[in-house]
Image (cartoon, rainbow, N blue to C red):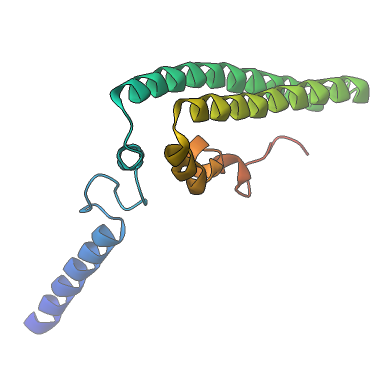
Length: 155
């Protein structure tokens, strides 16, 4: 009986350790998710001036993106109201859908503009490293490309 309890305790400890190590809790800085933002910026060898400019650019971009995403959410709510209304009108839905597409297009164009502004701050070698990482990692656009991330309210 004691042997089976010992084996059970050992197995539980082994599983807990395995899960903890698999999630990368003991790795420095990046938590097992590849190169973290700070490590990547270090690898670019940014000057203090470049870092300051990038931080200002990043903050301004984040503020714009918050506003654009809020607008998109409001339009999606408007769309849901039309779909769920008793007096469903296709023309209203089309109009709101066009407004939604324009807002989403504006969001994507803002990302492109941000990427261009960012590249203007970097030198040629830094640009090469930045672009080799790819836009999904650099611009955090990956969320939109994953399955199941579309508008779930559209039926």
